[in-house]
Length: 90
Picture 1 (cartoon, rainbow, N blue to C red):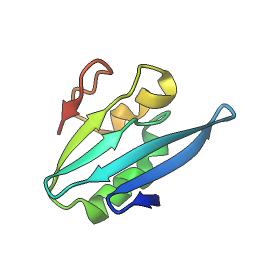
Picture 2: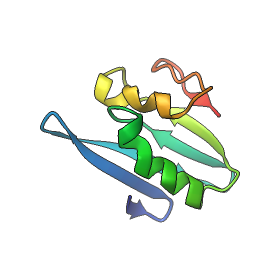
Picture 3: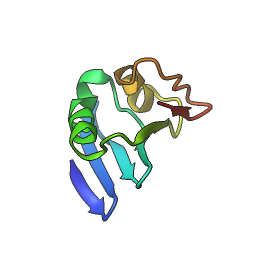
């Protein structure tokens, strides 16, 4: 995870030759995950980061759009409705 600002981190992968990222914004009450990459395996560093840094903050998953390289990692958040059309809360 790369820190971009005081409360913003990113995990960048290459998806079929294109840089693609998942971002995490931490507030005092929420951990907001923006896009979930190509699958749960790619989200492992993000999940580890959340476990270490987010404590008991509620999770909010936001998909910027429906492309596979931005939503297939939603499965890393079981029990959460993470449709691209509406953010999901955990």
